[in-house]
Image (cartoon, rainbow, N blue to C red; front, top):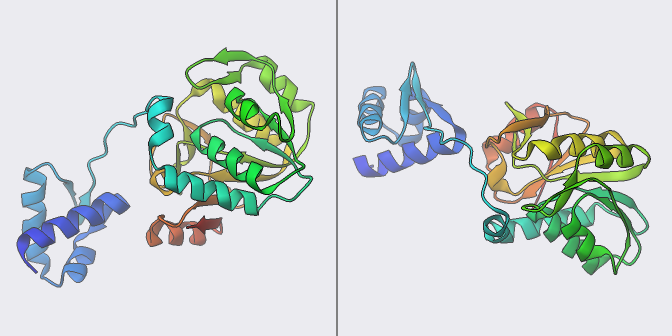
Length: 253
């Protein structure tokens, strides 16, 4: 294997998993430990990773939250796949709660294509507008957050406490074994937690690009009682981590 091929393989491996040991990299690349150590010195000098004792870790950029129109276009195929998986987990006549966000909108489209009778609780005006002519939709009260087209605050939280749903679907900005479930909009987190508290079954759904990432604020820890939903692009390493934590991870193409 040529040196540049090794550099690419090492960078991708460390970037995907966040870290790698010298032994792991040597085995994967089929070279000696000393060769890998020299490769890591070169890659660190060129800003492609950070050396640590026994291996290397990825350079992590500060978490960034894009505006809604940008997110609407990003990873759309994967979000559609997530929405289709969610639709397969819902039954005609269910009472469900939907979080806000772009994946919520793809989920709304999948539900409209498959069902005739559902009751949907949401704090998202966008989801409400999408579903109001198809299903029975309950929109929480609350203060309006125009950038996300959703409601928040004490009124939203109180209204959820008066209701009960069979299933709720939360669409966070990041999911990982180490850091749990995280999101970027602090005012939405109490609403998300309330939806989870007053539902029989909790589903955490996100496209595969969000698995292993970070966001601003923790919604909850990883919990084996919840079901995690993503598309088929999630790495085998992450799937293995979830299995080791006895967390049910459902994937779809």
